Image: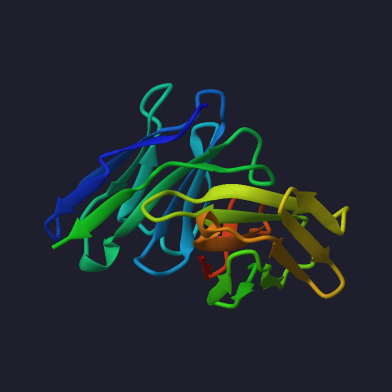
Length: 114
Length: 112
């Protein structure tokens, strides 16, 4: 069964450092998303990406964040200068035709900023 | 934007009993309402969804009901089993249709 894969599964970084979280969406999907989940809280939308551009972003997704699809398979989330409050589980998701359809989530990357 | 409220935050039932989780939403234009199950250490996984043109949808032991007038939808799990223990999230689309707004989640515990 096709799945969304994320690497690494756990990333520890020092405050102020840059991190890149990587995702390989399902191959025939066209819409890609990043969500985050702070421990014990709800899943929060960060950004959606379609046709090589951001289609929507939340207020969480400020100038410290960026996304890229560097090739035909990877989708990355970069945090330029990490803060303690960026510590969370980051989930990548993909859909084949927009949001009103099943979103397939990866296993997540646990980011710990120290 | 869309506001999704979910209740209860925790729910404990005995194996074989039914469980009901409720969500309300604010945007009357919303037309798609999925439910996701999140097991420990994993990403959310869709278990059932409903579109606004129907009032109920069933899939074996799981059902979702939608009341568009009242702007609420509910997840019903019958004959619960220990493997149903997980966190359940309801969601509704952002007005733009490019993202999902999740409820705060319900931690369901099914005890044998």
